[in-house]
Amino acid sequence: MGFFMDITDRRLIEEALLNSEHRLHTLVQAIPDLIWLKDKDGIYLSCNTMFERFFGVKEADIVGKTTTTL
Image (cartoon, rainbow, N blue to C red; front, side, top):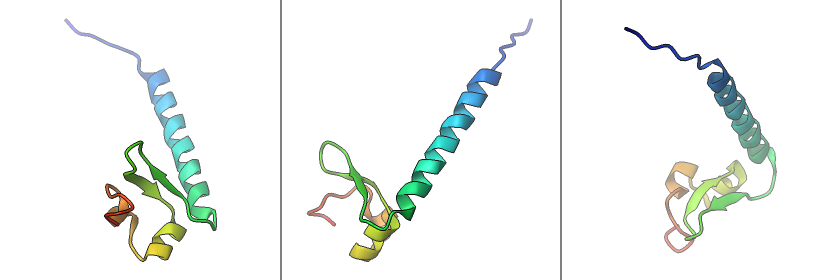
């Protein structure tokens, strides 16, 4: 006995989402202004290259912190 499910549509949707996320990331990185994303508690989720340069810290060291712990 076997089970088969066609996941072609799902894979196409996932690929489209990844492409969209990549385009958004590229756009945010190319903007010459400081850009950051925080959650509702004020914790950094992401930032662009200009934000990294301004603070002299890599994004990996910014994510998960707040303004007071940065």
